[in-house]
Length: 254
Image (cartoon, rainbow, N blue to C red; front, side, top):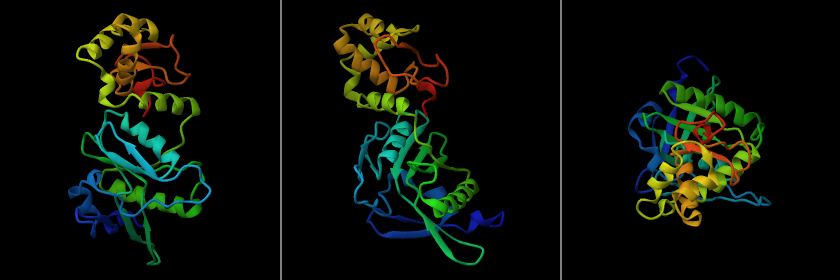
């Protein structure tokens, strides 16, 4: 590939009527809201796998996002909890390009995430580093080049540590706004953890722990509170205000 091959990419996506549109990649990246588009092609169903295509309800958008694998669902969970992310979509665009020999190649990244500054992330979610083989690695190089040409990022997202994934999955169960609780409860929870203290002590300070804990977990998911996710969550784990802690906390989970 030459240094300016980014200008030679094409994008294929579906319009609101479900019709395929092919457009110069540089134009599409500037004008198309990929976060609002359906998958350009269906996720494959692979016989024998315990987890098939499904939907993830996004707290960021209030809509469902298509997910093709358990690994992808986990990465959606990470991005959905990131306050820097404003939009999410599954497989909304296919990229086309030519090799130096003139052969046409294409790739559909699994994930699209829009950032608050307007830039975006295209990503794949391999369950193992070598998933997809040489074809996937070659495509990753091409898609990374296309993204760099428009100021975006492409990544093959590494699987999460088991403990981190389990903690995020637990907090994700409280991502829906209903878990913020009755009026005033969320504010009481944030005030209770204005300084770091054990989870159960802060929940008791905010009110009835049975009522307050969902509001605390909701605030942790949305990173309005912070705790370490490197060890299993438990009632004595330290919880503190937003900005407190280290890269191993919910502040750095993404």
